[in-house]
Image (tube, rainbow, N blue to C red; front, side):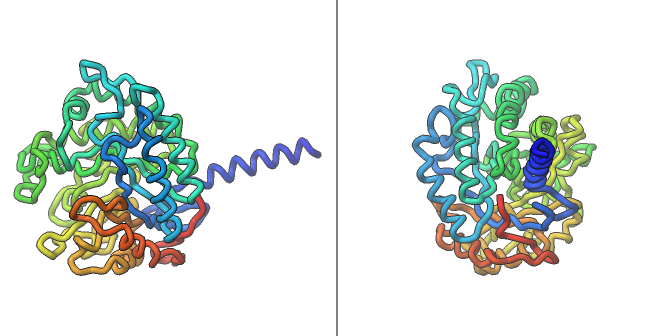
Length: 379
Protein backbone atom coordinates (compact mmCIF):
# COMPACT_ATOMS: atom_id res chain seq x y z
CA UNK A 1 0.00 0.00 0.00
CA UNK A 2 2.80 2.41 0.90
CA UNK A 3 4.47 1.68 -2.44
CA UNK A 4 1.23 2.39 -4.30
CA UNK A 5 0.77 5.64 -2.39
CA UNK A 6 4.36 6.64 -3.09
CA UNK A 7 3.95 6.00 -6.82
CA UNK A 8 0.65 7.89 -6.84
CA UNK A 9 2.25 10.84 -5.06
CA UNK A 10 5.18 10.86 -7.47
CA UNK A 11 2.86 10.90 -10.47
CA UNK A 12 0.62 13.54 -8.94
CA UNK A 13 3.52 15.78 -7.99
CA UNK A 14 5.12 15.41 -11.42
CA UNK A 15 1.80 16.26 -13.04
CA UNK A 16 1.48 19.33 -10.86
CA UNK A 17 4.92 20.60 -11.85
CA UNK A 18 4.20 20.01 -15.53
CA UNK A 19 0.80 21.69 -15.39
CA UNK A 20 2.25 24.63 -13.47
CA UNK A 21 4.11 26.09 -16.43
CA UNK A 22 2.79 29.03 -18.37
CA UNK A 23 1.25 27.73 -21.59
CA UNK A 24 -0.62 28.97 -24.64
CA UNK A 25 -4.07 28.10 -25.95
CA UNK A 26 -4.85 29.97 -29.14
CA UNK A 27 -4.41 33.68 -28.48
CA UNK A 28 -4.41 33.32 -24.68
CA UNK A 29 -1.91 32.47 -21.98
CA UNK A 30 -3.09 29.76 -19.60
CA UNK A 31 -1.77 28.45 -16.32
CA UNK A 32 -3.18 25.58 -14.27
CA UNK A 33 -6.18 25.41 -16.58
CA UNK A 34 -7.12 29.10 -16.35
CA UNK A 35 -6.66 31.98 -18.74
CA UNK A 36 -4.11 34.39 -17.25
CA UNK A 37 -2.92 37.93 -17.94
CA UNK A 38 0.73 38.99 -17.65
CA UNK A 39 0.62 42.20 -15.62
CA UNK A 40 3.97 43.72 -14.79
CA UNK A 41 6.89 45.80 -15.95
CA UNK A 42 10.24 45.98 -17.62
CA UNK A 43 12.97 45.98 -15.01
CA UNK A 44 14.82 46.40 -17.40
CA UNK A 45 18.21 46.52 -15.67
CA UNK A 46 19.99 47.64 -12.54
CA UNK A 47 23.31 48.34 -14.28
CA UNK A 48 22.84 48.40 -18.05
CA UNK A 49 24.43 45.28 -19.55
CA UNK A 50 26.33 44.48 -16.33
CA UNK A 51 23.80 42.65 -14.16
CA UNK A 52 24.61 38.94 -14.60
CA UNK A 53 27.90 37.09 -14.91
CA UNK A 54 31.40 37.54 -13.50
CA UNK A 55 29.98 38.00 -9.97
CA UNK A 56 28.06 41.15 -10.95
CA UNK A 57 24.73 39.93 -9.58
CA UNK A 58 26.20 39.91 -6.08
CA UNK A 59 26.28 43.71 -6.23
CA UNK A 60 22.84 44.07 -7.85
CA UNK A 61 20.66 41.52 -6.07
CA UNK A 62 19.46 43.81 -3.28
CA UNK A 63 18.10 46.20 -5.90
CA UNK A 64 16.62 43.37 -7.96
CA UNK A 65 14.84 42.08 -4.86
CA UNK A 66 13.53 45.55 -4.03
CA UNK A 67 11.72 45.68 -7.38
CA UNK A 68 10.48 42.10 -7.14
CA UNK A 69 8.87 42.99 -3.82
CA UNK A 70 7.34 46.20 -5.18
CA UNK A 71 5.78 44.39 -8.14
CA UNK A 72 4.48 41.61 -5.89
CA UNK A 73 3.08 44.02 -3.30
CA UNK A 74 1.18 45.89 -6.00
CA UNK A 75 -0.33 42.84 -7.65
CA UNK A 76 2.02 42.39 -10.60
CA UNK A 77 3.03 38.93 -11.75
CA UNK A 78 5.79 39.30 -14.36
CA UNK A 79 8.97 41.21 -15.22
CA UNK A 80 10.98 41.53 -18.43
CA UNK A 81 14.70 41.87 -17.71
CA UNK A 82 17.57 42.62 -20.11
CA UNK A 83 20.61 40.35 -19.91
CA UNK A 84 23.40 40.35 -22.54
CA UNK A 85 22.42 43.66 -24.20
CA UNK A 86 25.50 43.93 -26.49
CA UNK A 87 27.69 41.29 -24.87
CA UNK A 88 30.03 43.37 -22.71
CA UNK A 89 29.92 41.09 -19.64
CA UNK A 90 28.03 38.10 -20.95
CA UNK A 91 28.53 35.98 -22.90
CA UNK A 92 32.31 35.63 -22.88
CA UNK A 93 34.11 35.99 -26.23
CA UNK A 94 37.59 34.96 -27.29
CA UNK A 95 39.91 37.32 -29.16
CA UNK A 96 38.38 36.27 -32.49
CA UNK A 97 34.80 37.01 -31.49
CA UNK A 98 33.67 33.45 -30.81
CA UNK A 99 31.71 32.69 -27.65
CA UNK A 100 33.44 30.42 -25.14
CA UNK A 101 30.87 30.50 -22.34
CA UNK A 102 28.24 32.54 -20.57
CA UNK A 103 30.86 34.58 -18.71
CA UNK A 104 34.55 34.51 -17.91
CA UNK A 105 34.27 33.61 -14.21
CA UNK A 106 31.65 30.91 -14.65
CA UNK A 107 29.15 32.43 -12.21
CA UNK A 108 26.39 33.40 -14.67
CA UNK A 109 24.13 30.36 -14.30
CA UNK A 110 24.29 30.36 -10.50
CA UNK A 111 23.53 34.08 -10.47
CA UNK A 112 20.58 33.82 -12.82
CA UNK A 113 19.16 30.84 -10.94
CA UNK A 114 19.44 32.81 -7.71
CA UNK A 115 17.43 35.62 -9.33
CA UNK A 116 14.78 33.16 -10.52
CA UNK A 117 14.54 31.60 -7.07
CA UNK A 118 14.04 35.01 -5.52
CA UNK A 119 11.41 35.83 -8.16
CA UNK A 120 9.57 32.62 -7.29
CA UNK A 121 9.52 33.62 -3.64
CA UNK A 122 7.71 36.80 -4.70
CA UNK A 123 5.41 34.97 -7.13
CA UNK A 124 6.85 36.70 -10.22
CA UNK A 125 7.50 35.23 -13.67
CA UNK A 126 10.73 36.41 -15.34
CA UNK A 127 11.16 36.96 -19.08
CA UNK A 128 14.87 37.46 -19.93
CA UNK A 129 15.53 39.59 -23.00
CA UNK A 130 18.86 38.53 -24.48
CA UNK A 131 19.96 41.31 -26.84
CA UNK A 132 19.26 44.97 -27.60
CA UNK A 133 19.00 46.63 -31.01
CA UNK A 134 17.73 50.01 -29.83
CA UNK A 135 21.12 51.47 -28.84
CA UNK A 136 24.51 50.88 -30.44
CA UNK A 137 27.42 51.40 -28.04
CA UNK A 138 29.90 48.54 -27.50
CA UNK A 139 28.72 46.71 -30.57
CA UNK A 140 31.63 44.62 -31.88
CA UNK A 141 30.67 41.33 -30.27
CA UNK A 142 26.96 41.51 -31.10
CA UNK A 143 27.81 42.56 -34.64
CA UNK A 144 29.81 39.38 -35.10
CA UNK A 145 26.91 37.21 -33.98
CA UNK A 146 24.52 38.92 -36.39
CA UNK A 147 26.70 38.69 -39.51
CA UNK A 148 28.75 35.51 -38.92
CA UNK A 149 26.89 32.21 -38.71
CA UNK A 150 29.80 30.38 -37.09
CA UNK A 151 30.03 32.96 -34.33
CA UNK A 152 26.28 32.81 -33.75
CA UNK A 153 26.46 29.03 -33.53
CA UNK A 154 29.27 29.34 -30.98
CA UNK A 155 26.95 31.42 -28.80
CA UNK A 156 24.17 28.87 -29.18
CA UNK A 157 26.41 25.91 -28.33
CA UNK A 158 28.56 27.43 -25.60
CA UNK A 159 26.13 29.77 -23.87
CA UNK A 160 22.47 29.65 -24.85
CA UNK A 161 21.86 25.90 -24.73
CA UNK A 162 23.70 25.48 -21.38
CA UNK A 163 21.68 28.39 -19.98
CA UNK A 164 18.36 26.94 -21.15
CA UNK A 165 19.24 23.49 -19.80
CA UNK A 166 20.11 24.98 -16.42
CA UNK A 167 16.92 27.00 -15.92
CA UNK A 168 14.20 25.26 -17.94
CA UNK A 169 12.66 23.67 -14.83
CA UNK A 170 12.74 26.83 -12.73
CA UNK A 171 9.12 27.75 -11.87
CA UNK A 172 9.78 31.50 -12.19
CA UNK A 173 11.01 31.30 -15.79
CA UNK A 174 8.12 32.64 -17.84
CA UNK A 175 9.66 32.77 -21.30
CA UNK A 176 12.39 34.27 -23.47
CA UNK A 177 12.70 37.45 -25.54
CA UNK A 178 15.44 37.12 -28.15
CA UNK A 179 16.01 40.78 -28.97
CA UNK A 180 14.71 44.18 -28.06
CA UNK A 181 13.78 46.34 -31.06
CA UNK A 182 16.05 45.16 -33.85
CA UNK A 183 14.37 47.88 -35.91
CA UNK A 184 16.82 50.35 -34.38
CA UNK A 185 19.58 48.87 -36.52
CA UNK A 186 17.62 47.59 -39.51
CA UNK A 187 18.09 49.09 -42.97
CA UNK A 188 14.71 50.51 -44.02
CA UNK A 189 13.84 51.05 -47.66
CA UNK A 190 15.65 47.96 -49.00
CA UNK A 191 13.80 46.32 -51.87
CA UNK A 192 13.92 42.52 -52.02
CA UNK A 193 11.97 40.20 -54.30
CA UNK A 194 11.27 38.09 -51.21
CA UNK A 195 8.55 39.98 -49.26
CA UNK A 196 9.91 38.70 -45.94
CA UNK A 197 13.15 40.60 -46.49
CA UNK A 198 11.73 43.72 -48.17
CA UNK A 199 11.83 46.79 -45.92
CA UNK A 200 10.54 49.41 -48.35
CA UNK A 201 7.46 49.71 -46.14
CA UNK A 202 9.71 50.92 -43.29
CA UNK A 203 11.09 53.85 -45.30
CA UNK A 204 10.57 57.12 -43.37
CA UNK A 205 9.03 55.21 -40.46
CA UNK A 206 11.79 56.02 -37.98
CA UNK A 207 13.34 52.55 -38.22
CA UNK A 208 17.14 52.55 -38.32
CA UNK A 209 17.52 55.22 -35.64
CA UNK A 210 20.45 53.42 -33.97
CA UNK A 211 22.40 53.00 -37.19
CA UNK A 212 20.83 51.33 -40.22
CA UNK A 213 23.30 48.44 -40.45
CA UNK A 214 21.59 45.08 -41.04
CA UNK A 215 19.11 43.54 -43.43
CA UNK A 216 15.84 42.01 -42.32
CA UNK A 217 17.18 38.63 -43.42
CA UNK A 218 20.18 38.91 -41.07
CA UNK A 219 18.03 39.81 -38.08
CA UNK A 220 15.43 37.15 -38.80
CA UNK A 221 18.11 34.46 -39.08
CA UNK A 222 19.55 35.71 -35.78
CA UNK A 223 16.17 35.25 -34.11
CA UNK A 224 15.33 31.98 -35.89
CA UNK A 225 18.51 30.18 -34.85
CA UNK A 226 18.32 31.19 -31.19
CA UNK A 227 14.61 30.46 -30.92
CA UNK A 228 15.15 27.05 -32.50
CA UNK A 229 17.88 26.25 -29.98
CA UNK A 230 15.71 27.26 -27.04
CA UNK A 231 12.67 25.31 -28.22
CA UNK A 232 14.67 22.18 -29.10
CA UNK A 233 16.36 22.25 -25.70
CA UNK A 234 13.10 22.96 -23.88
CA UNK A 235 10.04 22.08 -26.01
CA UNK A 236 7.75 23.77 -23.46
CA UNK A 237 9.59 27.11 -23.64
CA UNK A 238 7.74 30.24 -24.74
CA UNK A 239 9.72 32.62 -26.95
CA UNK A 240 9.09 36.08 -28.37
CA UNK A 241 11.03 39.02 -29.80
CA UNK A 242 10.02 42.55 -28.88
CA UNK A 243 9.24 44.76 -31.87
CA UNK A 244 9.57 48.53 -31.70
CA UNK A 245 6.22 49.13 -33.33
CA UNK A 246 3.37 46.90 -34.45
CA UNK A 247 3.74 48.13 -38.04
CA UNK A 248 6.26 45.37 -38.85
CA UNK A 249 4.49 42.85 -36.62
CA UNK A 250 1.28 42.40 -38.64
CA UNK A 251 0.10 41.70 -42.17
CA UNK A 252 -3.30 43.31 -41.57
CA UNK A 253 -2.58 47.05 -41.83
CA UNK A 254 -1.00 47.36 -45.28
CA UNK A 255 2.34 46.42 -43.73
CA UNK A 256 4.24 43.17 -43.23
CA UNK A 257 4.87 40.87 -40.28
CA UNK A 258 8.61 40.31 -40.31
CA UNK A 259 8.20 38.14 -37.19
CA UNK A 260 5.89 35.59 -38.84
CA UNK A 261 6.67 31.87 -38.82
CA UNK A 262 7.12 31.95 -42.59
CA UNK A 263 9.65 34.78 -42.55
CA UNK A 264 11.70 33.44 -39.66
CA UNK A 265 12.03 30.00 -41.25
CA UNK A 266 12.76 31.47 -44.67
CA UNK A 267 15.59 33.52 -43.19
CA UNK A 268 17.16 30.90 -40.95
CA UNK A 269 15.89 27.55 -42.17
CA UNK A 270 15.37 26.09 -38.69
CA UNK A 271 11.85 24.77 -38.26
CA UNK A 272 11.58 25.18 -34.51
CA UNK A 273 12.76 28.78 -34.71
CA UNK A 274 9.32 30.40 -34.62
CA UNK A 275 7.84 32.59 -31.90
CA UNK A 276 5.20 31.33 -29.49
CA UNK A 277 3.78 34.78 -28.89
CA UNK A 278 4.18 38.27 -30.29
CA UNK A 279 5.19 41.35 -28.32
CA UNK A 280 5.41 44.96 -29.36
CA UNK A 281 6.19 48.37 -27.87
CA UNK A 282 4.17 51.55 -28.19
CA UNK A 283 4.82 55.18 -27.37
CA UNK A 284 3.08 58.33 -28.54
CA UNK A 285 4.92 60.72 -30.88
CA UNK A 286 4.17 64.42 -30.48
CA UNK A 287 1.37 63.49 -28.14
CA UNK A 288 -0.36 61.01 -30.43
CA UNK A 289 -0.29 57.27 -31.00
CA UNK A 290 0.22 56.21 -34.60
CA UNK A 291 -2.32 54.11 -36.48
CA UNK A 292 -0.59 50.84 -35.55
CA UNK A 293 -0.56 51.37 -31.77
CA UNK A 294 -2.18 48.69 -29.59
CA UNK A 295 -3.98 51.38 -27.61
CA UNK A 296 -5.95 52.17 -30.78
CA UNK A 297 -6.84 48.55 -31.58
CA UNK A 298 -8.23 45.36 -30.16
CA UNK A 299 -5.68 42.56 -30.21
CA UNK A 300 -7.81 40.72 -32.78
CA UNK A 301 -7.32 43.57 -35.27
CA UNK A 302 -3.77 42.36 -35.92
CA UNK A 303 -4.93 38.97 -37.16
CA UNK A 304 -2.69 36.89 -34.91
CA UNK A 305 -3.24 33.25 -33.99
CA UNK A 306 -0.92 33.71 -30.99
CA UNK A 307 -1.01 35.85 -27.83
CA UNK A 308 0.06 39.47 -28.18
CA UNK A 309 1.73 41.31 -25.27
CA UNK A 310 2.11 45.09 -25.05
CA UNK A 311 5.67 44.70 -23.84
CA UNK A 312 6.63 48.37 -23.41
CA UNK A 313 4.43 51.40 -22.74
CA UNK A 314 3.95 54.12 -20.16
CA UNK A 315 1.80 57.07 -19.23
CA UNK A 316 4.39 59.72 -20.09
CA UNK A 317 4.29 58.40 -23.67
CA UNK A 318 0.62 57.56 -23.49
CA UNK A 319 -1.13 60.22 -25.59
CA UNK A 320 -3.04 61.43 -22.55
CA UNK A 321 -4.10 58.00 -21.27
CA UNK A 322 -3.73 57.38 -17.55
CA UNK A 323 -1.66 54.34 -16.60
CA UNK A 324 -4.75 52.64 -15.16
CA UNK A 325 -6.59 53.21 -18.45
CA UNK A 326 -3.70 51.63 -20.33
CA UNK A 327 -3.70 48.52 -18.15
CA UNK A 328 -7.49 48.28 -18.40
CA UNK A 329 -7.35 48.60 -22.20
CA UNK A 330 -4.80 45.81 -22.50
CA UNK A 331 -6.81 43.59 -20.17
CA UNK A 332 -10.20 44.21 -21.78
CA UNK A 333 -9.20 44.32 -25.45
CA UNK A 334 -7.74 40.84 -25.82
CA UNK A 335 -4.03 41.34 -25.15
CA UNK A 336 -2.04 38.70 -23.30
CA UNK A 337 -0.19 41.07 -21.05
CA UNK A 338 1.13 44.57 -20.37
CA UNK A 339 4.62 45.54 -19.14
CA UNK A 340 5.36 49.17 -18.29
CA UNK A 341 8.62 50.97 -19.07
CA UNK A 342 10.54 50.81 -16.76
CA UNK A 343 10.97 50.04 -13.07
CA UNK A 344 14.38 51.60 -12.50
CA UNK A 345 12.93 54.77 -14.06
CA UNK A 346 16.25 56.28 -15.12
CA UNK A 347 16.19 58.41 -18.24
CA UNK A 348 13.57 60.81 -19.53
CA UNK A 349 11.04 58.62 -21.36
CA UNK A 350 9.79 56.64 -18.40
CA UNK A 351 7.10 56.79 -15.76
CA UNK A 352 8.09 56.88 -12.13
CA UNK A 353 8.18 53.50 -10.45
CA UNK A 354 5.25 54.59 -8.28
CA UNK A 355 3.07 55.37 -11.29
CA UNK A 356 3.84 52.04 -12.93
CA UNK A 357 2.96 50.23 -9.72
CA UNK A 358 -0.29 52.19 -9.53
CA UNK A 359 -1.21 50.75 -12.92
CA UNK A 360 -0.44 47.19 -11.84
CA UNK A 361 -2.41 47.64 -8.64
CA UNK A 362 -5.53 48.51 -10.65
CA UNK A 363 -5.59 44.96 -12.08
CA UNK A 364 -4.50 42.95 -9.05
CA UNK A 365 -7.91 41.39 -8.31
CA UNK A 366 -8.99 40.79 -11.91
CA UNK A 367 -10.16 37.35 -13.02
CA UNK A 368 -12.55 37.77 -15.94
CA UNK A 369 -12.08 34.62 -18.02
CA UNK A 370 -13.94 36.24 -20.94
CA UNK A 371 -11.44 39.11 -21.07
CA UNK A 372 -7.88 39.15 -19.76
CA UNK A 373 -8.12 36.31 -17.28
CA UNK A 374 -6.58 35.72 -13.87
CA UNK A 375 -3.90 38.14 -12.69
CA UNK A 376 -3.16 36.73 -9.21
CA UNK A 377 -2.02 33.30 -10.38
CA UNK A 378 0.47 31.17 -8.48
CA UNK A 379 3.96 30.76 -9.92
